[in-house]
Image (cartoon, rainbow, N blue to C red):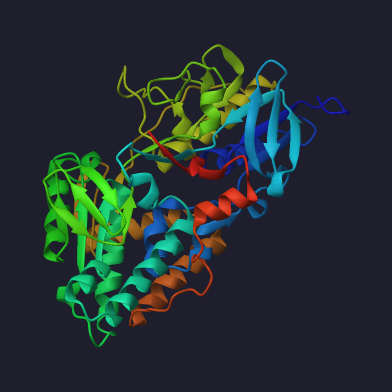
Length: 446
């Protein structure tokens, strides 16, 4: 309790789950009902579905992030990384920038730190692969691809030129497929600006261990996505895994060794490492077991939402909701209502949802998806995808900026400028310097 007797609510995580839960609590709880604190590693929420377009330069990267303090009017925002949670003492240890420690007391706790990239124990993968979950990584990849095109334009050896212009992405889920589609289009537009390069020098390879891409959309739309990528010259390798990675090369399970200086890993995530320290009931993936009210099993004072929670799916008995932004946002609202009810405001309710569908932007005015059971592809799919993102973006100002970016981009000829020092430094090194407790946890071997 605070000095004036108000219960303390601590929300861990500033993504979809954490931000929208805190926002819901501000609406549900009167100012004198509780003190709300949100802890986040950044002072903004990233609208991750638009990361591929930010990476390709179709969108200004600042326009897909939402300042937490702009959305939250009453909650306190503390920028830092949670290094430990004591469930007995009801305290939360936070490492702020440059290693300063803070201890927060709580009466209600919401765990929503999201997920981190999980790397397999393949030899060389952790040393040479890059992730794709943050704005820093998105900007870094854009700069890196353009830097490789610059390098390819300067070398005389044909094999070295093609190695520089070869890009390999592992994982054909939403992130990997959209990333390949956007960056392939960017590089194809850019290559015309280089006198010594042509489209035949470019090579994009999308590798997936299963027999389809975008499995959540079903086989029909998955095949459609493969056909679109093949039509653009993307080499899609299904039923294929990475065997070994070295400096300037990657060996696949089909026996081919590809010379490349660009390997992007989008094939696995796991809950933030702080979750494993709690000793709470969890499944094999490390997700916390929660009931239909989003409270952690055995702890009515602790809630969990988003990627870190195994949330029962009421429409599919015995199964659980997928870790998507759509579910995280809806879970956050339910969590806020139920936490408020635990403090005597309102009535708690079980988490329910109606599946709106899934949409994927393949760039070049082409999208695929399923909306209320209806399959979409081509221009209608692309328009619907963009319309949904404008609807889902927090704040009218961000919707306006993204909409203007799209409008201006229609008249552009393809920007091939690297963004100076922004995104040039290794994002992992920056993270380790600012948050010593975090360090390499954003890219952990399995």
